[in-house]
Image (cartoon, rainbow, N blue to C red; front, side, top):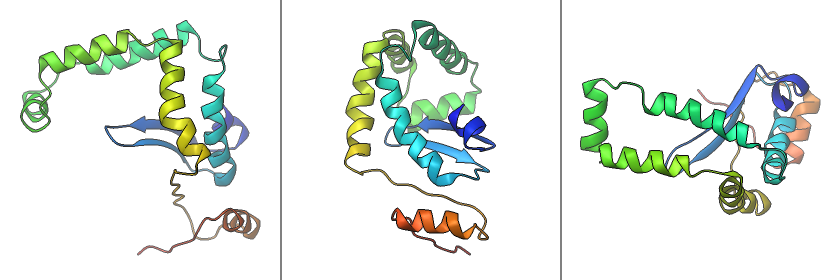
Length: 151
């Protein structure tokens, strides 16, 4: 809502793997405001009434839809052989997901997101056109962003 409707980005989201959590937007005319919104979203998650049990259930349904989708033999082999993820590991992951609740979300956000944002241990990358408006460029540079031309 904040990134698309208020900041004007075409879209955005979040993703994670074993060692990286990333928030992103694309076709975003307000990149710096979106970076600020990402930081604010961490504190929004910690408020008691913002995440409901229904929100958690819907998120889990979405996750289980992709986790339990049929896998082709090559994908299953890749996971088992190269990533050491077999059916027992997948089942343990399912059980951990089923245990998610409001408090566990707050605990994870506090442990893995609040401190890095507060201690400026996060990295930002804004990729886009070079003909950025001068006022936007100045705002980014005033907030320690550097411009690099690739290619």
